[in-house]
Amino acid sequence: MERLRQLLRRLDGKGYKAYKDIAGTYEQGELKLYIDHVQGDPYASPSRIRVVWYGSAAAIEPAWLESPWRRIAVQDYFARCVAQAIRRGGRSSSGHGKSGEIRIDAPGQEMLERTAVLIAANKLEVRLSVGLPARGRTILGKAAADMLCEQVPQLATAAVQERDAKRLRAHLELADQQQAIRSWLKQHGCVAFVANGAVLPRESGVSNRPMRTAETVVFRSPSSLERTIPLPHREPICGMAIPEGVTLIVGGGYHGKSTLLKAIERGVYNHLPGDGREYVITDDSAAKIRAEDGRRVEKVDISPFISNLPFGKDTREFTSDDASGSTSQAANIMEALELNAKLLLIDEDTSATNFMIRDARMQALVAKEKEPITPFVDKVRQLYEQHSVSTILVLGGSGDYFHTADNVIMMDAYVPTDVTAEAKRIASDRSDERVPEGGASFGEITSRIVRKQSFDATRGGREKVDAKGLSKIVYGANDIDLSQVEQLVDASQTRAIAHMLRLLAHRYADGQTPVLELVNRLYALVEEQGLDAISPYAGKHPGDLALPRRQELEAALNRLRTLTVRRPINLADDSAAAD
Image 1 (cartoon, rainbow, N blue to C red):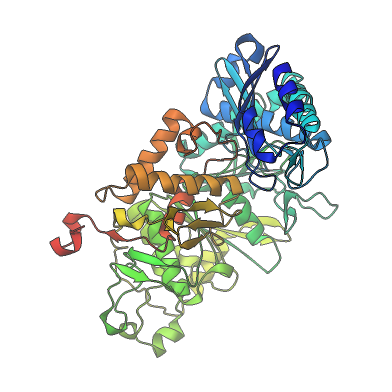
Image 2: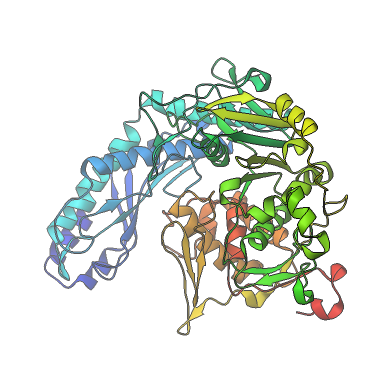
C-alpha cells in the first residue's frame, strides 16, 4: 500500500491517462486492494476496485454458507453495511466529473442475489466503484492516495469487521423463515402468504419503504383463510394463505385491492427486516400480467384467446410490431406459460376490458363468430383445471368472474373479508344467461425456438448492449422497453439482463433450443459458477449486478425487436422449420 501511495504522489499533476499505471494488487496488513479497471477519463464510468480478506482474516462463519438463501442474506447484509459507511463519509475530495466518489451497488428493500459482496469459504470480498480524483483532466494524486490508501480500507474494514452480530443473525434467521414459508406453501397447495401485522402500503409513489403513519392499517387475515406456519428461530406465524385455484380480490376503489396485489406481486422476492412485507411470500414463478399497447410480439400462439382475425391472420403464430391491448395481454399470458409460470397476477385496472369480459348483452348484440376474442373469464378456470395454473385477480367492475372463483376476498378500508359464499350466492341468484365461449379446452401451450440471427446487437460496426436505468436496455440499433415489466425491481437486475442477452447470443442460441431450455441452461451456469459468470469483462469485477428471475429475462427477450423464432419441427411444417 505504501508503494501505491508513493506512485500516486508521483502522478500528481500529470494527465489523467497516467492513472492507468496504478492497476494491480496492493496489501496492507490482512487486507488486499485490487485495482481491476482504471477509468480513462474523469467523466467516464468509475474505476473498479476490490477490498479482500482471505483465510482467517475474512472470519467467515460456516453457518453463513449452509444454504443458498443464507449466503445471499449475509452478502446482502455486508453490502448494506458498506453502503451505510459510504453514506457517512464516502467522498474524499472535490474536483471534476466523478472525482472522489466511492460507491457500492447498494441493495433496496428486496434481498437479491447480487455481486457487490462475494463471500466464499475462505474469502470476503467487497466490490466498489471509485471516481479517481482530478481537476479537469489533471490527476489529484494526493487526494487519490488519501482515498485509496486510507479512506477505502478504513470504511471497508469498519463495515465488514466491526459487524453487528445481532443484526447479522436477524438477517440470516429471517432468510431461513422466508424459505420455510416457501416450502410450506408448496407442501400445502398454496400460492401466496400474507402475515398478520404486515405493512403493505408504501411511503409514496416514488418510495418503496413502508408507510408509517397513524392511518396505516396493518394486515389481518380473514379467519377462514388464516393458517399457522411453524418457523425456525421463532414462534409460529399466522396469516392469510391463498390456496391454488382462482382467487378474486374485490372491493371499492381506494380500499386496498391493488395494494394487496402489489405486495403479493413483490412477494416473489425476500424482503429485509423491517420492510413490512418480509413475511409476504409468493410462488416464485408468479407472473404479473397486463395489457401493453404497442409492444412487439413474435410468433406467439395466442389462439386460446384470439382467433378468426380479419383477413385470415394466423393467431397460432401471432406477430405484431404494435400489438393492441388485448393481443399484448394474451401474448403476455402465453409467454408466461411458456416459461412454466404457475401463478398469474392480474389487475383489472391495467387490463384490456375486451380481453377480460364480454357480458350477456354484448354477446346478444355481437355474435361469437364476429368476435375473435375469447375473454379471460372463460379461460381462467380451464387454466387451473387443465394446466394447474392459478390466478389472483383484482376486480372492481365485473361480477362475471364470481362463478369461476374458489375464493373471493373483499377489501374494505384495507381490511380483507372472505365473501366467497356471498359471491357464489349472487352468481347463482342473478344469472344473466351469459354463454361461456372458447370451448371446453384451454388450448395448447406451445414452445418457440429462437433463431440465431435474432441477436443482432451491432451499431456502427460494433456490438452495443447496455442497460439504462431500470426499464431500458440499448440493444444494437434498438431499445428494449421494460417499463411495463412490473416485477423488475432493481436497475442492477436490468444490467444483468443485458449481459445475459449477450451471453445467450454468444454461447447458447443455436437455433435448435426452445426458449425455456435456453433460459434454464443459462441459469444452470449461474447456479454452478455464480452471477460473475455472466460478466463479459475479463479482469474487471462485475460489482453492480443483481440476479433477475427467469421471467424478467424472458420478458426482455420477447421485447427484443430483432427477435425471430420458429416452432419446433414436430409442430410446424418443414418450410417453417428451416432456419
